[in-house]
Amino acid sequence: MLNKIILTGGAGYIGSHVAVELLESGREVLIIDDFSNSHPEAVARIGDIANGNVELLERNLADPAHLADIAAAAKAFGADGAIHLAGLKAVGESVAEPARYYRVNVGSAMALLEALEAAHAKAVVFSSSATVYGALNDNPVTEDGKTGPTNPYGRTKLMIEDMLKDVAAADPAWRVCNLRYFNPVGAHPSGRIGEDPNDTPNNLFPYIAQVAVGRREKLLVFGDDYETRDGTGVRDYIHVVDLAKGHVAALDYLANRKHAGAVDINLGTGTGYSVLEAVAAFKRASNRDIPFEIAPRRDGDIAEIYADASRAKELLGWRAERTLEDMCADHWRWQSQNPEGYKS
Ligand code: WQD
Image (cartoon, rainbow, N blue to C red; front, side, top):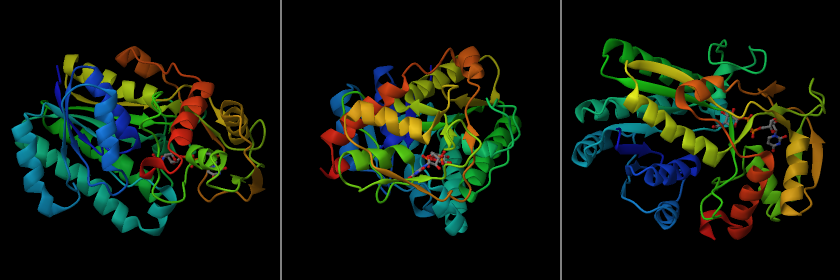
């Protein structure tokens, strides 16, 4: 049983939902977060939602001066392994600031490996991304598809996947699962935790939610001339609670798996929805108007990508259960109850 888990980035959007599921699975959690893109209030609310032991270490994995503290805390906690979510995640920003993305994302992963080695906790579930596939594969995309990220953010994800695979190949005591997220959206049904970007949202759903709640005037739809059913981009949106449950299933798999090594697993629903379909679903869920305007395509966007999620079903016994309507209703409950995010 991998029972005592370090959760890096555990105060963030994905991390706070993973923390809730870890506690509900009976595990103990040590969150390591520097709050550069998250809020201490989220950690307090994790404790409101789920009973259990959640400890917090406010440190920056990418800061070499913090490494000794992190390694000492991992040993003192008695960590059995880690779920690694901490990192920078804005595609456009990564194109503008590539060196910072390599230093923070790859540096944090290397620091975590050192801390886990020191604590003899050789198990990692890594937050990877469907962005590693680029636009090289037919849909639905399987884990054996070609990889070819088209931006520095995606290249850091693939680099970390490969680093973890090399570590697992060199030392069979290591167990590694690279979870390739498709598009996480929605929020915990309590409405207490959710997505709260620091500034203008890069992603579709938080932007739509801020239009619905009146924080933004209108949505810009980045292109309606793609080769898709309605011309707008198609993505595999997955409810963040389904995604979080996938992390617990991955830990159970690593704990019980007979052989060591690394495995890549898609976390998606297998269904793609277009931008206009997402807008219509959000309008129905929120009963709010979502004004939008068609704008030019966004650099680096691909037309369509959605997952083949059969490996997650076969290996983890996991599949996504929540619908697009659930995603919109839960995202809206969070946003309407917290119009200014955690600040409110
Ligand atoms: C979805 C669709 C846009 C905003 C990226 C990363 C991925 C992950 C999720 C970090 C596209 C359209 C968007 C807007 C729009 N990142 N859109 N107007 O680009 O699929 O994935 O974010 O974990 O790794 O690659 O997600 O939500 O940005 O875009 O029309 O204001 O919505 O063109 O078709 P994306 P997204």
